[in-house]
Image (cartoon, rainbow, N blue to C red; front, side):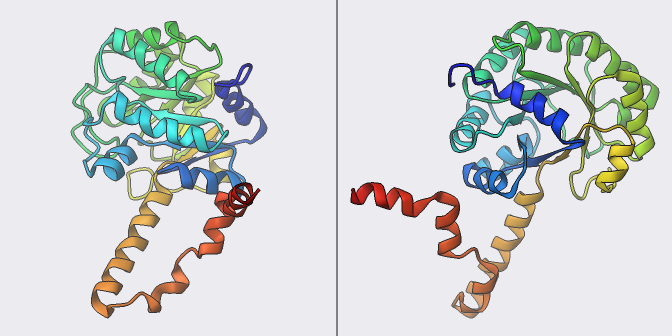
Amino acid sequence: MKTGYSPGKLLRTAVEVERPLQVIGVPNAYTAVMAEKTGFLALYLSGAGVANSAFALPDLGMTTLVEVLEEVRRITGASLLPLLVDCDTGFGGRLMIGRTVREMIRAGAAGMHLEDQIPDKRCGHRPGKSLVPVGDMVNRIKAAVDARSDPDFVIMARTDAFAVEGMDAAVERACRYRDAGADMIFPEALITPAQYRAFADKLGVPVLANQTEFGVTPLFALRELAEAGVSLVLFPLSAFRAMNAAALRVFRSIRMEGSQTGILDSMQTRSELYDFLGYLEYERKLDT
């Protein structure tokens, strides 16, 4: 990490500059470059995205810290935008959570979120979720906060309690997590703007709204979430889903037609790719 450079500080500043802050999920380093040049101020690495795209595995807590770190390093090596990382339940107990924080900071991440599910976690928008006791999650957060070498590194607490224990319990859990040191709160799988407002009013710290497609949370307009007091709006897998659909259309077309000529207009051109990569500048360096 560059001396004096704090990705966590960049993320905190972005939350203040853009209300609400659009946090865009990037499946890989190249999409991070495109997102930065499109004008986004913050990036996100989804745990489901790493499991799905890098390993063809479901989002059931089957990836490791080392595997996620590799994706973090690739993205932070390509873009200086602050990167928020999905760290599931922390990849282990308190000591391992501390290691997770230290390694994320070394890898250039701006922050991470921990959730209050049991280690055998499920996707936040699937039924059958089970939570750890409040005290266990408080200990997770304290372990993360204590391990920070950069005080600006963001520790975000995600709670899945709304779907399991109801609204009052979810807000109460979030308050306990805030008091334990969580900088921001991520209430998962809410269904109305008013519910986000309840969290924002009670907590007094930035609240994130997850706008993942095809889940239980409706897709709200940015204005609605802003009016509900939401500070960050997350689009974790939008690009990934679109890329998958596009790739499938290409595969089917080439398989059926024996040629890609009919789908060229749906592809990013070579010159567009080169523009995002700065390819010609690299060539000029070779020539000189």
